[in-house]
Image (cartoon, rainbow, N blue to C red; front, side):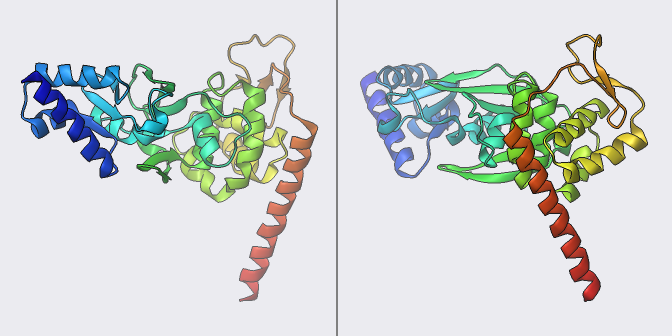
Length: 293
């Protein structure tokens, strides 16, 4: 009897994969096979032992195609959308993972970085690792849908990604790496889309992001942040909140104590200045075109 159930699960898994589906829940398996929980668990364990499925969470199973058998499972972006639906939590792919999806691939993260509303334990499924970060204001974060092999994932916009890189600097490789990634991400950012990101953002994060954008030569992108700081900032913060103030210089524009020297590659800074100048030229050209109509 157990052997029949085991074969039934194998056939069910093969059928799902043939339909382009790579996940199923315990409840879906029970409904499809009409077996007991213990029989399903036995069959799941048997298929897990031969690498046919992997279970990132109890009751949530991922089908492993043969080409990913040696890796222990498919990429995490194949199933993150279904996993978060299983958890019944909002989410978006963020930080370095989002930056890479937007083309800023200076440093490819070794994990899928996902922002959600409540704390979640990291996921390990074969070589795939998912690390979660909490943002209680997640409903205000603008996102886009990016296509994956199995469907779509929610990804923070380039502007929201930039703010998150500053919000979680250690997870983003430190401020030096954040600055480098920002210089690449800037190509996809737009000053007129910053307002949606700044709404509800902590002033300290806005001040730090503005400083770093200015540092990499992205003055046009930094400008709306400078306006926000001039109007609303009431406190002076440290650039690195975990380091002492001693010896730091004050940036009056950003109301920041610069207590860490952020090393920015000369080429990065030069490219940023050129890009910012081009943006300014394009912006002025658009104004002229509108006025001539």
